[in-house]
Structures are given as structure tokens and as C-alpha cells.
Image: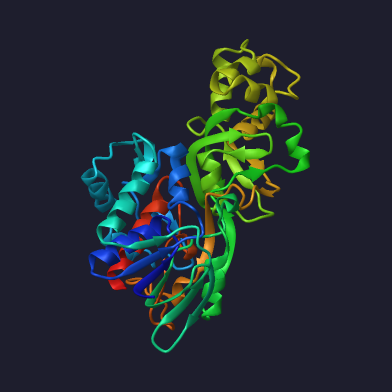
Length: 390
């Protein structure tokens, strides 16, 4: 069988690419080893799919070439996807920081994308593994469990290595290397951080405590919620910083970013000297966290505490240095950092420069978005521009 375009991967990027290519009159086959399309779409946003972010732009992406994503993102914007969602009558709402979610279930987005593919008669082979890919003089030969098929253009949209229990593999990276493309080192991103054994036991009592915090690594900071877990730290601020953090380095956590705690404590010592230090802290932070911070405090009244003792308390709150042991790995990572080098691809079409007819889109590429709908916007945008080009 011969197709104009074969797409490996029926996720967000692959389905978008297939729909757009079909609208341009291409005969398209989408192949996926999963039994259902869009599995990452289904589980995203707690089952409500954080399908885009109204503020999504190049500043929200990490890549060895930070300019690469600009072309695709400018040609298919968050509003373009919102228009498609509205066309299908899918109700949605905005949460904080421009994040858009379905009012209903994520399945609505999957149904919309598959409907777009059905309208243009895309063929969809699910539960079908690709066994081999070769390039002849004019066509790619793709061997699957069903049969071998050929196409003039091949799009790799099979995602990264994150969440292997959902079927994620390194197939896309291996295929890139097979055709001589560089693959940037891959790491788990948007992933919880784990404590060392020295920290894990004393902080175990804080599991489940959540605060609004500022988490910093180098010059990068995020002000969002932080969650203590039985293994370490999670929550949006930690997931965000995990994409920048390198193993062996510390991060800095400000548990009370709106307040200069040292100045506030000195003021309180002057105005309410009889106030208990534990009482003051428990008014600012959850009780369990307050108890932990005051675990070694010997004096109760603010009036009895020296500047040095107040500084020690303030540092624990405003400038807590934490050296994580590592991350929870690809098992729980939302996305993969790194991937097919953007130097090997055209930013306008996503085509491999040295392999005409071969395209890479979505998570498999070295473009990783921040938390909050940005990675889906990259999937839509990269799928769109490739769909126009194939």
C-alpha cells in the first residue's frame, strides 16, 4: 500500500499533522502501537486536558536553540486552537496563569482531533507496532506488524520517554539516529524531586503540606505552589524548576516570598515582644511546617531571641537551600527534555535538512515547554506546520 504521508504516533502532534495534511489533499496513514489515540491527552490536566495556554510563546520553552520554536508558534497560536475547540462546542475555562482546561473530560479533545482526521479520510492503525523503517530512492518503506507500506513523506510524532507505563519508548530517537540526526541528551522534565536519606526522614512528617513558594535554580525562578511528599518535593513550582535543575546542585526555596521574614520578625519583636515565635510563624505557614522550622528553637518569646536566632529562622523560611537526591525519573515525568536536535530540522517545516521527506514533531524534538499547556501548544503548532509542508 502507498500513502502520500505516513505519521508514526497518534498523539497530539500526530493527529494535528494528519488532519492538516488531509485538508491539503494528502492521503495519510497514522500508526500507533497503543490501542487508543491520544493517551497523553486523556490523562492530562487531571482528566480535563490543559490544552493550551493563552500566554504561550517562545519564552515558555527550553531548547539548545531557543529561537527554533518561534516560527511554528507564530503560525499556529493558542487562539487558533481555541477557535477549533469552540467550533466543536467544547466548553472550557481559564485557570490561573492563562491555563485553559475543558469543563468536561479530556476525551472531548481527542474526539475533536480524530473527527478532524476522519473528515479528511485519514487511515488510523492502532495497536500496530512499527518494526522497521528504510528509505529507498523515492519512498520510505515502513514495515509494521500488519504489512509493509510506502510513502513519499514520513512524520515521526511518537513522543519522548516520559511515562513508559503509557507506552512511551525511545523509538523516535533511535529513528533519528538511524538517519544520522543528532539527539540532544534526554532527561525527565516537569518531574518531582526526591530527598536524600538525610532529609527524607526528618521531613517525612510534612508529607501533604502545600504552600505558595518561590523556587529558584541559578537565575531561574518560579512562584507557584509547592507540595511536600513522602519522597521529596512536588507541586507546580518544583515541576517547573526540575526542567532546569542539574543533578548534584542545590535549589533555593522561599516558603514565604511576599514577606521579608527577618525584617518582619524584628518589627514583631519590637511591637509585640511577648509574642511566641511559634505563634508568629504558624500565622504565616501551615502548622506542621511551622513546627518543623521551630524544632530546635529553645526560646519562646520574641523578646528573648537574638538577631542571630532570628536570622536562622528567617533563612529557613526565605532562603532554604535544598540539595535534591534526584528526580522520580521518566516514570512520573510529564515530558522529556532534549530530543532530536533542532539544528537538524527546518523551523518552518520540521523537515530533516539532510533527509528530504523526513519530519519530526512534538515531544520527540528538543523543544520542551513549561508546565501549564505549553507542551500541547508546541504539539499543535509543530504538527500544523509539518501538516502544511508534507
